[in-house]
Image (cartoon, rainbow, N blue to C red; front, top):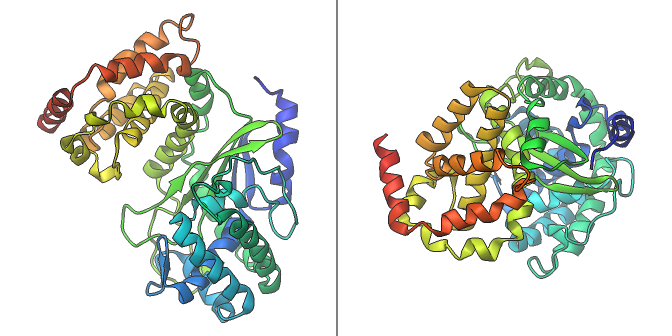
Length: 400
């Protein structure tokens, strides 16, 4: 369903108006630094002093290659033994053992009004991962308490003053990322998949600790439920290591000046918003062909940390969408770059076969009005393959 332009602006602008670290970069796309998320990572780094590690953060690393992480810890380390941080530490210790990640908490925090405002901006859906008591027993109550504790920490420690004092750094990060966000691709993606979302919210996480390394970064794309419909969100860390300077005000680079990673993440993660929900409904069908995830294919994809057939199919189809979106935009140079990267360099050996199928989809929208309606054709083609076919494709790609 198309949303009228003025209606969409009135829906998206209240958040942008409230948060100074936010920009509406197109009628449907916002780029922000979220106060709740930044508060969370400051607290997480302090909590790690008590619990040792959490995801990428650990007690022994200063993260001086990430200025906000380093100077945020330096600014607030006197708080690490205060009751509010001790309680957050205990909550995170329990959540670590239940969820083994922090993406669930971050997704939940996006439903809250940004601190210091209280309450929820949108109602939390019952199918929120953090609310899944079957998969994460006890996580719901802990997550809700974590949100309350973070709000208290924000107020007590005056996190808002830290954000305001370092507005220039955060705005510099937003400016770096904005240069490379391919907002022109989104209408083409909507048309190719035959689906629209109420909006797209992109969040930078300068405060998220990432292990030192030239190719290290993290991103993920939660789907948020709003009164106007589904909103495709994407959160991503810095991807450029920076040399340590004396203070945050001395930096002229901000960790997000990475054209390749930003373009890849913004299109790729948005692509997951179109693909993942559809494939989740068809998981039993996908798993029938798990034998196709051969050791050779696993080796081919090892640099993408793919460990099973289900994820393998998802990642192939997201990359297919990237390539075909570039083709639809008339950008054959970008399409060829993506083919080389995804197939030759990253080992997604089924992409050429999937592209041939995609042409069928693209030329018969009467029969296949959207990507969802074409998925059975894709799964039928995959089902006809054998493990030997897969290994042959891997070998051919290695020789190319």
